[in-house]
Image 1 (tube, rainbow, N blue to C red):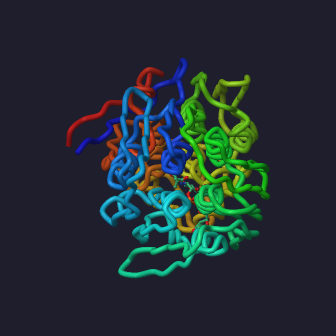
Image 2 (spheres, rainbow, N blue to C red; image 1 turned 30 degrees about the vertical axis):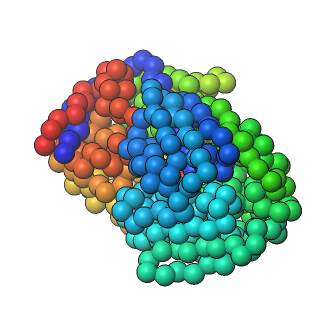
Length: 422
Ligand code: EPU
């Protein structure tokens, strides 16, 4: 297994290019199952989760060719409807084959994803939405078994929960509804940019979708979908991680290229409030850190609110910000596994329910750390960039799930960072 070794204290300077979005490409790859012909997906990030999705699609009977940042998926006419535990348990996003299989084949068996280090993560809304379209759903032997006696039919589906909306439940219902009879309205739909990208791909395949990006999506079912070519949007969470990286050490000046600043408005707003100089163009963001920063109050919320997937990274920044910052997690109230590891590096973070009270300290000290979550691991790398001495981030496979060559990209900015075999 590999570890990432970070030497702290270097100023970051230069440009970094953002890869395609993990959370867009995964449902888009699943959506390709709906087509009667092959689809070509471009700007695909080279990530462990993408490899897992390739394996899953092959298990389901699709032919998948993977080249340099391009994937071709040919679903064929002999799809198998079973997504096994062995794959779903390694990547929760596997659940987004449920909607396409049901839409295309009228049946699906997908292993229940189970527990997750960032919280409970049930899939009740996915099931509620698919039931509203006419699927008969049972849970047997750890699997969701969904079957539509006749074809799925359009319906009004309210996808509400106490936390707001669900991204992948919206994706699953949108994909299943694309081939249902009649019109579906998803109310309280999630509006994340990755869902807009998914809808854009489905529309290229021949789906009739309106309202993506809002909380009311209308899908007029069609009889069949064809294949399509699509280039995935850039990853706003990777972009956000590099923006925070550019703010970690005084004197840094980082330009994050190939990103859409519109997708990171909440983060940019908070960085500016903290005293970071941020200049955005249509597809880049320049981040400069001069003096001391000011503390911030942040609450994670569904898009366009502050993303939960950047909560751990901004907390790494808050640890070195004089004063008291308060970071409240509303999407996953238990997503704080980075806190104890950051505290091992000398930060002073106290948890109060779903809020972290961060007392800024003068310095962090490098330490061996590990976290079993992708974004928590990214936060530890960021903390390592600013800490005194050497930080070793273990269990790097979590980082590899969602960051393409993070050590190479940060190294090109002047960070002292390398990957080593344990
Ligand atoms: N929820 C329910 N019932 C459901 C579905 C969700 O109660 O049926 C709850 C969850 O427990 C959570 C909230 O709803 O409290 C939001 O979860 P959501 O369904 O929106 O999350 P998701 O679709 O499973 C995607 C991303 C996550 C990201 C969340 C929130 C993908 C593959 N994953 O997950 O990304 O944190 O949306 O924005 O798109 C990551 O990339 O590190 C990551 C975890």
